[in-house]
Image (cartoon, rainbow, N blue to C red; front, side, top):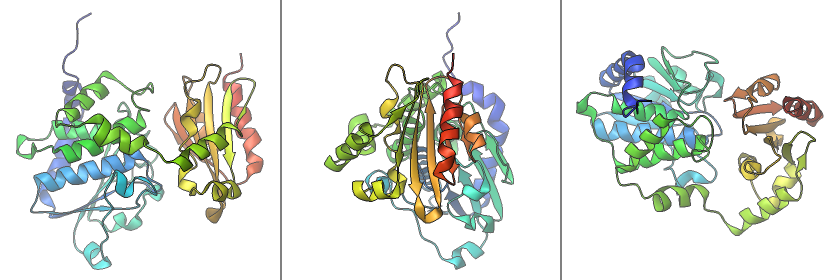
Length: 334
């Protein structure tokens, strides 16, 4: 077959009108705020900070803010602390760009509603088109990949891509692709990664040591999980961390899902999940992963959704857990 050498041209043809419309809005507003979802992950913060940095680099005359939630571990080790603005700042005209967030209720800072105009940029299936302008491309493994594609196809007057912005976008891609292991990874993903690396990124020092470097306590957490997980007859592995477990392990609820991929490369395990109690909010947070089969349909039955091989869900009682595990297990029954 003929070798395809420019995967950026494919998206340019389909999405250039949306890219142009977004760019025109950026030019119009002197004040721009970038938002992401609550309990942010690599792609949320990587996209948010990558886009914010790119905007600041190319439009130094504008006020650019990143608003939302910091991460309990990766702020400020990997990402800078988010900005803090007054209510007065939000009363003046501004453009809101919300990234990596499928529905409006999940936006970390709900003050995005104050904006004169809202742009939604996302790679999740379109649960809710809450923006005045919506750019959703589910073929991208990460919203960071989509933002990088937008940057590549912007007019040349906005051609500055700093190493700092590139690092942020790379972390989003690496995080949401499972370091390029998930089936959502495409040739375009690798081309995007290569383009970002061309800014001078040192993958070890600038990216992976900051993303995946750990402490001695992290080893104790992994040890606990490896001694307290379960596996169903059809290869669904899962672990449960109660509020008492979290306190004993000295980790916050946001870190409960960090070790869900401990089971990703184990023969005989087809899907895996973490179930973490969020006692202040009276619920259990669920992270689901799969090697091949789609698990987002099961997630949708439990107040969640997401990608075919990477989804999230919510249980409001641990009594719901057996049903969740049963549905997952049945996916792999022969």
